[in-house]
Amino acid sequence: MKTNIDIDKLITRASSKIVDKDSKVDEKMTRSENVGYKAFNEQSKKGTRTLNLSMIPQYADLLVKRKVTGVLVNGTSGEGPSMSVSERKLVAEAWATATRTTKQHLMVQVGGASLPDVLELARHAESIKADSILCLPELYFSPTTTEQLTDYLRLVSLAAPNTPLLYYHIPSFTHVNIHMGQWLESQNDHIPTLVGIKFTSPNMEEGAQALRACGSKYVVFLGNDQLVSAGTALGMDSFIITSLNMLPELVLETVTEGLVMRNVMRARDNQQRLTSAVMAISRHGTWVETMKVAMSLLTNMNLGPPRAPLCPLPTQAVTSMAKELQGLGFDIRIEMAAVSIGCGDFLEFQDALKRMRQIDDKIIYMLNVIIPTESFQKDNDTHAKCKELHEQIQTGHKARELAITKCLNASKEKINRLVTERNNGNNSFELVQELRKEQNALRLLKSELNIEEVVKKHTVSVFHKKCGYFYKSSSNV
Image 1 (tube, rainbow, N blue to C red):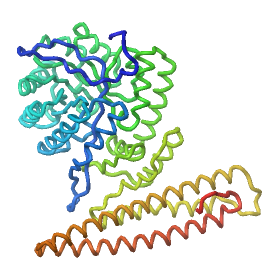
Image 2 (image 1 turned 90 degrees about the horizontal axis):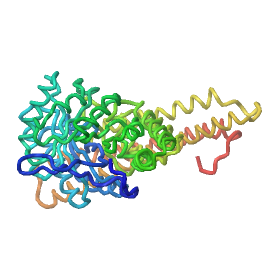
Image 3 (image 1 turned 90 degrees about the vertical axis):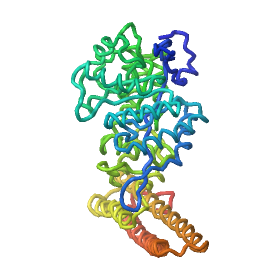
Image 4 (image 1 turned 120 degrees about the vertical axis):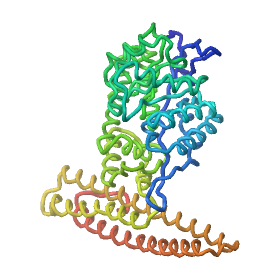
């Protein structure tokens, strides 16, 4: 590791290893920070998830403004293996366009598919001038020996002979448990463009051996959010972690304290806060399901729901996550909790709204069971309980109102578009049918707004009756 590091420029654009005409590595990839990209998905008419590529420029701009100067797309957090080849190409192309403006390093993950598709994706990544390629192993007939893994990645390398290649080691997902230190030591340029690995494993002894392999020839990107400070203590200066999406400042501070300032105690404290945040997020579901919601709560990005078999988080889980993150001192965009509800199918929207309203039933139950009558002495415990319930009521009502308003506006925009098409001469049966369906959905959405007002008044009335003596709020609730 270089010792003359400019702290303000610690997180710099990932420097690709330079590959000459003979495919020999001339320059080592040094310190860099990349981010795991989350695919944008929306609810389509038939219940499948479709890409929302229009948000990618906004996403890239958000990251670069927060000093994240590299992106990994179509990875694990980005649901790459859940997308078709054509979808993955579209995502990569959209990011290639965005990063030409933001000047971010673009790493494209091409693995997790059949070998012909992997090779096609590798060729495509090179054609759009990706800065580097990352590759998962075969996920069904997984390699079990170093020779099998080497032979597989050599084919990928030959498909994109001018682009640096990294192997994606994530045994908890792939169940490929080949020792990375030993594997890198065995390479001897068998894979012409291999420059390193992404190491997503808690086995730091193995990671350290990989880092030192062949005289530290290869870059090792640590991919574990909860081991950043441990990685810096071992000399790791490259990281690709999902939390860089929503908590980049905390991650970068952890790296700076551990790698540059050599302040082990500060790095440990920052790591503990980062770990607490990751645990508060991930405890509510699978990694992708929870991280998408966390992006909505901690940034202004709505990444939509995940693709099946993964599912959107229940509203109660979103509310609980928001509360835990607030308790850890993070600023939460409560209004973004509403984005967990899609507007594409009214029945699904109505069902989600009913689930969101269950919190009012639970609050009323708690008010009736836990909160004493005025004849009992007022105490701090009752005051705290009332305050907590008051905050839950405000959060729930605001989220539901925003969700309904969001879908109302989306429905109005769609109706206006369909009417414009009809006025321009399109009188097809399909368009008329779709217009009538959307007009009916708009009426139903307006009725939900009225229902929401009734639910809200009832909950607020019970709250004032049970908590009015114990807790006085400055708000109207």
